[in-house]
Amino acid sequence: MPSSRFSLGRITLSCATLVCCGVAAWAQTANAPLAFTGADRRPALSLNGDWASIVDPYFSGLFSFHHEEKKNGWFLNRKAQPNDTGPTEYDFDKAPKLKVPGDWNTQRESLFFYEGPVWYQRNFTYQPQEHSRAFLHVGAANYHSWWWVNGKKVCEHEGGFTAFNCDVTEAVHPGDNFIVAAVDNTRREDNVPTLETDWWNYGGITREASIITVPNTFIDQYDLHLSRTQDGVIEGWTHLTGAGAGVPVEVEIPELHAKAQAATDANGKAAIHFTVSGLERWSPEHPKLYAVKLRTGADSIDEQMGFRTIETRGTQILLNGKPIFLRGISIHAEAPYRTGRAWSDKDAETLLGWAKDLGCNFVRLAHYPHDETMQRAADRMGIMVWSENPVYWALKFDNSQVYDKASQQLEEEIGTLRNHASIVLWSMANETPSNPARTDFITRLAAKARELDGSRLITAALLVRAQGNTKIVDDPLGKVLDVIGVNEYIGWYEAHPETADVTQWDIRYDKPLIVSEFGGDAKAGLHGSDNQRWTEEYQANIYRHQIGMLNRIPQLRGMSPWILMDFRSPNRPLAGIQDEFNRKGLISDQGEKKQAYYILQKAYKEGAVGKPE
Ligand code: GCB
Image 1 (cartoon, rainbow, N blue to C red):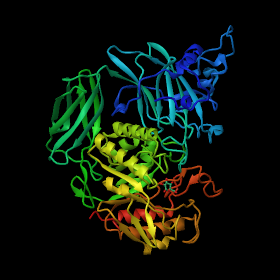
Image 2: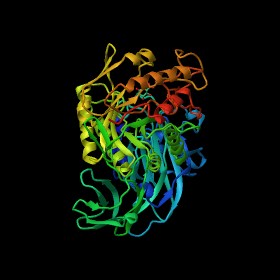
Image 3: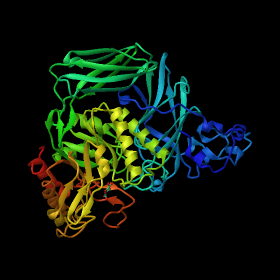
Image 4: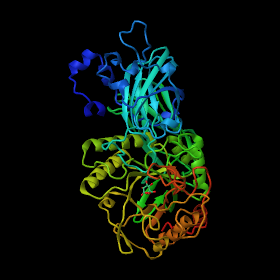
């Protein structure tokens, strides 16, 4: 990917100028970042912990063409020398620290609202191994990041919520090494997501970082799932980097005494197809995971995987061939109790533990792919997942570069997370305006998702039209989805909670419907009457009337009200109530359960909402 900064151009320079000034080093092409399945199962040298940080709002560490003395760029990590022709005006050794993983906004008060570039640097000791390759693995860095190892550019990545891996084999050496990153969370119109969202634009290396070592020929991606059509058959493929045709690959599930052997084709891909007997299928009631060993030559990965099928039949959603209702809740990657971007096992277990306690068998992980710790926890805890691409609100749908960015993030999302049984739905988008450019954009994305993974269902959260008291679901995008998601806010952005009692639904598709959002704000501990906004009572009243209405939609197959926990958003400044939090949570950011929590819990636990057929 070219640097958008450079192409946006502060200054126009020819290649010759760049080279003679010595600044070409920042623009060096590096290998494209790659998506790996199971990167978190690889032996790794952790790069978590303290990194030196320099806040650089003018990005002068990268783009100073004017001052000769800055020409080398901060990625070289130079030390000031007495005979320097000009002063070196940065020093990572003296710079304050930021923790990785972690957003910078909640680590340093002065960075709370900051949007722009920040430099990161740390040292590490590494011993390269023979016949091996080394990759920098980054769980996520929001939004645009550039990476150098020992002054050599190793990659550049766009997208704030997907994991990527950069080949650093040629850049690392035995012993002491250093790594420098520039991370820029500036919002731009032609980014995905675009300028406006309803969540905090947390910047930084927000998820774990490490150096992983793999053999020269290694398994970079795999897809193993239960066949929908052949009983007891596990099918899929593994892909090897560095392999031509005829390289043997083995997949083994020791507990089932089952083993598949295959060989790669000319593209390094090996088709897997084997029959297992006695398989216990993964489900919310029985989230059985098997140890799965993938092997080829010197490489092996030890996985924990569940096996299940997910499909639709008419207006039903079938899990393992049986109709199911998705009792869900939406979740943002906001860290419980401490706020900031969630990333840890503990964050995942707290959030999903609340969802379980609520009676959920399903969560919508909005509005971007969450950290893989969430999917691993959902696999273990038996919670089905809706995973979402950050195509949110009004992107520049007529811009082909924006499409490429969305498509790249979708490829990274599926490439990284396709090994999780918990994920049943890939969501293409949230609340996009209905127009031909948008429909074409998301239709192409949906086709891409199906090509990458034909074993799951495709959805999107759509807007609905209103005619009097009737809600009409006829967005043309519905044609390309397996499951229709719709968001509506009766009782909050429109009308009164009681309006739900007289609302009719006219759904123009014979497909399963999930109401992917409804809700209203309440400040935990604020009490009043049922019709007093911002109180817990008002929010609870919305839930009571919504549940009544939803039960009258014959093809309703799931719901994920908005939202499990309050989350930070700069769109929500109402002092004393919101204080920069969206307060639609059923639980406050400090873990206080609001009345509506118990309304939904009762409905879910008593089976008072939703029938699978
Ligand atoms: C929506 C959006 C969600 C917002 C929510 C709200 O429709 O999909 O991202 O946070 O409404 O609270 O307004």
